[in-house]
Image 1 (cartoon, chains in turn brown, purple, blue):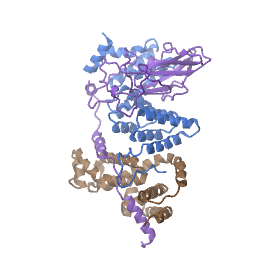
Image 2 (cartoon, rainbow over the protein chains, first blue to last red):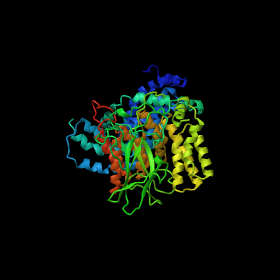
Image 3 (cartoon, rainbow over the protein chains, first blue to last red):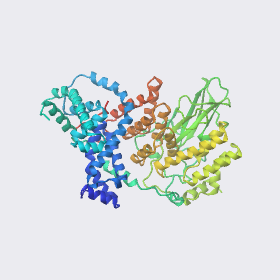
Image 4 (cartoon, rainbow over the protein chains, first blue to last red):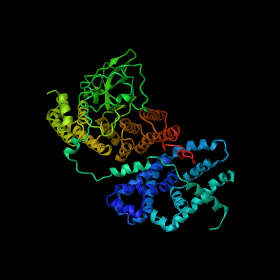
Length: 184
Length: 210
Length: 217
């Protein structure tokens, strides 16, 4: 595995013809990409596909990456777009799962364990508007600044702040009870 | 902001979401494989494709020998029956490697294994029912079906793996699609047409050559 | 010369012997009027020159002939199919079998994207793709939207499903539709259930700290 060198060094090597050097960039950025995509799309398999897709697209347009040293940010932008596209495609089938959700709600209340905490979070995230979910993840999970988020999403900062706020409010409502039921 | 319990909840949510997600072990390999494939396409030159390994397709009914031991071929269509050669053998679970179909790529001499597909149509009023499709040059005169007492018409056709369009021809003039089969895509010349798929093709050898 | 020997020679030598090429379009004799036959033969010849199989194209022409279609329409259908086969070959690669090309062309016609074909091939380079491609096209024929059908097939293949189960999946969806369910919804619900049944094969292994998460509502 080729990991020596900063993003900029690796990008320049790939552009010079060393295709294998790209594997270093993949290794460096895949975990974070998957983390975001999995939370955004709510499905690990789809997330893997989205991240893989994003890496290939990033490779294809590597030449137009203006700041090779910030490949990660550029890659994340591509990934955000991939997730948006997939999210739009899935919206048609979202109504279908109402049946499943009702079944889950009727299930007897179980004491919340650690893995169920994650499931509850996922469930709550799914109920957010996609743009709110995206903004929440970028701000609170990826830790981006609003300026960076604006560059990445193309949205204006006030709009992003509103999305994050709404997401947090909504998540609090959905998860406070669950959190209270957990062992401290 | 303020250090309220609400923010505490948000940071706990975020912390949970920051935990790594398990990756499939071949993730990197897949990305790099896709990346390596992504070379600018070269103009197709005649000699290029001729040099590369190709499967030579034989017309299924041309000199076809029914191979013994047809286990491993799965017929995927409106109607299917176990292979004629040994009807006691179950059709193999297609999740297991299909040993029988690991045949050498056809060199024009090896027969390609086929499965027997039964076509059925219930048409008690019909005087004749024929079958026309991709596997018999769409020649309705060639494959007449056999009528059973119940008014069910049947015929068995050996088919190699692939996808075949077909239609029933009732009384020599009426085209009837198979009500139990999927419809064919694409231009059907205004006549609803059915399709049957036979699975179980050979696993390709890595870097196969003739 | 014996046709089989000719074909063997053609395969090994990489030459399209004229006699072989003629044999493939000879099936058209007596079925099409001269003008249509000439047009179709020309289409088949140029398709062959591009590395595409002739039989599916000839079959298409014969289908039109047996249904009494107009010569112009037959030629158009053959041309369209040649285009589909070429696009399929571009997506699946040159080692695609004739059966895979035909099934792939049907999938494209049903609304699959070349990307879908590439994903199938990329993910499963050694397995015959006839059945996954066929199931995708068959689902669309039953009313499942193309993107749902493609995603369903991909999801199921990733989850480890192969031919028999893919067919069973399609048949289940057909039953649901027959009972009144909207096709897209039926497919989506069944994919969800299938992924759960197949457990964690989508990610390949049990993660140590976090268990597999089901597809979200």
